[in-house]
Image 1 (cartoon, rainbow, N blue to C red):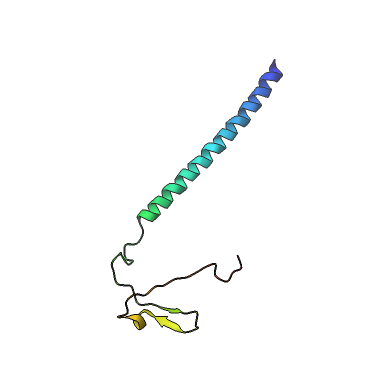
Image 2: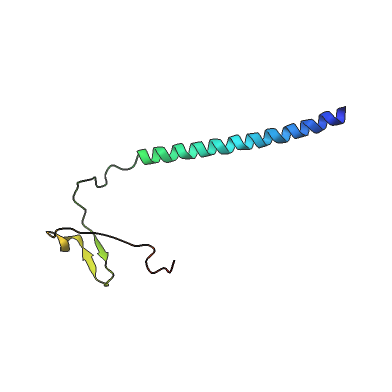
Length: 90
């Protein structure tokens, strides 16, 4: 009788550790999601808002020249596009 009680105690202890690990992992996931939500809610408000004029910038073009936003002032529209997978073969 004593051996079987010891055996079940060890099995119970194992399951308790597994349950404890699962609860710890779940707690870490919830904490991570909460921290991400707080970080997104506290995003800096100093950036441009919808309807604001674009800040001055310059970018290299595919033609090798530098293009600035001021070069296009007064034109109908300026589209800034990038293609991260262009010419990657994938």
